[in-house]
Amino acid sequence: MKKPEPVQVVKQRRDALLGALVGGIPYIQFLGITFDRRGDELTGLLAYDDKLIGNPMLPALHGGVTAAFLEVTAVVSLSWASLWADLEAGVIETDEPDHIVLPRLPKTIDFTVDYLRSGLPRDAYARARITRSGRRYASVQVEGWQDNRDRPFAQATCHFVMPHKDQPSNG
Image (cartoon, rainbow, N blue to C red; front, side, top):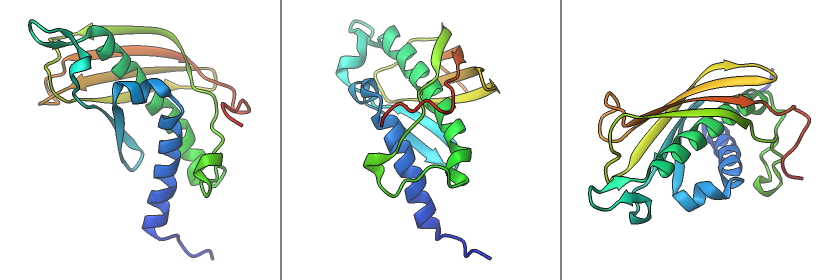
C-alpha cells in the first residue's frame, strides 16, 4: 500500500498547477486578478486599483473590467475543474512548474452580464458555479460581490466550447 503524501506536498502541487494556469493568461496580471484556492474551490479576487475606475465622478468600476473579471473567473474555474481530476490521478506532473503542459482554455460562445449595482472603489470577489460541463460544451454562472456575498454587484451566465483533451496550450 502506497503511503499518503504529506499535506504540504499536495498543497504545493495544487498551487503550482493553479499558478501555471493563471500565469498563462497575461490579461489576468494586467487586471491584478488573483485566485484563492480552498480545496477544489476557487474565489477570484480583483484587487482595487485606480486604473479600474470607469466613472471617476461616482466613482465606479469600469463595466468592461467587471465583465472581464467575471469571464476570467469562469474560464479559470472551468479549466481548474477539468484539471483537478487529472492532477489528483497523477496524470499532470507539477515537479517542474516551468514545464507544466496545460490543455487549451475553453472558448467563449456567449457571455451575458447583469450589472446589478455600481462596483465600488474597493476589492471585488467572484465565484463561478459550473452548471454543465461535457466533452464539447460547458455552462457556467458567475457572481461578483464586494463587501457582502449576499449582495452581488454583477452576475454572468457563460457558455463555452471545451477544448479537446489532447490539445496542449504550451509545449
